[in-house]
Each structure stands twice: as C-alpha cells, then as structure tokens.
Length: 67
Image 1 (cartoon, rainbow, N blue to C red):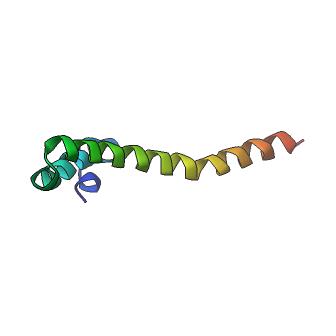
Image 2: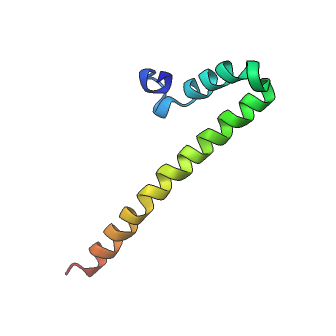
C-alpha cells in the first residue's frame, strides 16, 4: 500500500522495498529481508513486462499488415 500512496516514486520504487525490509527484518534479518525485497521487485517487473509483450507483438504485426 505504501508504494501506491507514494506518488513521487514511480511504481513505488524504493518505498515498497523499504517497507518490505522493515516488516521482515525481525523475522529474516536485514540481509534476508533485503534479498526478498529485491527478488519481489524483480519478479513484479518480469510479470508486468511479460504481460505487455503479447500486446506489443500483436500491434506490430497488425501495423505491418495494414495497407
């Protein structure tokens, strides 16, 4: 939620990870929490890009077929 509320950070970059680390460092320790926060951001980015790729490919193929 903090990433959505922080309108100055694009996609909550930094804010989301900071809250993630603060909440998990008691359980996992700071290095483990940081690793999990980074892995979470990478997976979120991969998921968003993966969802966009079919639409990007379709629009390019459709544009080539137009007269």
